[in-house]
Length: 257
Image 1 (cartoon, one colour):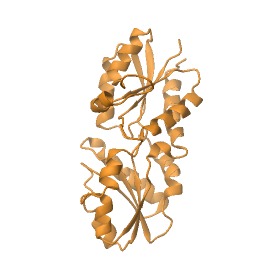
Image 2: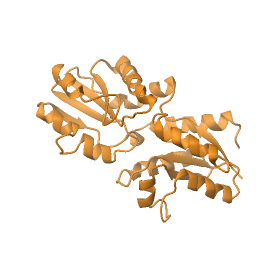
Image 3: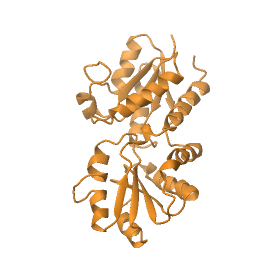
Image 4: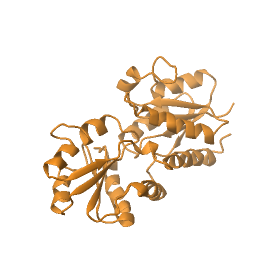
């Protein structure tokens, strides 16, 4: 029995769920001999989300138990969390307690090669005009991996220039002053790229929303024109290759059939 591949994402109940289906199709095409299963790490979302004919989606611990009951002794578990932060740490704990052997694929942006590759994927969406800033906005975290956002900014600026800024919608690194910095630098146009796998709640509410605190509203108040990419990273051409490369590395490292 071939070792299954388990894809683990945070989850969403918005139309952005199509991103997961898009990724799933790409993974199935590349690994036709392996069964592909999906799990979502948000308990709230699993209680609300129907997935591929199931009554509801499953948490990782629920899916691992189900796979063990079906006779599987191991599974490749590919996290779709972007950085090795809180969600991935929790997933590792669940994998260690599972009734079957879990072989983890690395989080998607966790090596110099990954940072270089995400720069290549984002290149078509980066402003080439020195008069327009590009703002890459991620989630943010209290986990020590918050420093990864500074690393991302360093890679992007080295490749595209100093008009690239990286911030987050909550937690760390502190990003409240970024609108002031971009305005003080004289930019009148900003292109916002949501650094999320899917453009879900944080995109609709915190980035492109009409609320006073949204990034869109704050830029408009400074008379800065904005444009936003309205989908997540998972829909970008070539992003699936990062995921597939991580799965291949886990399979190769553990000599999985």
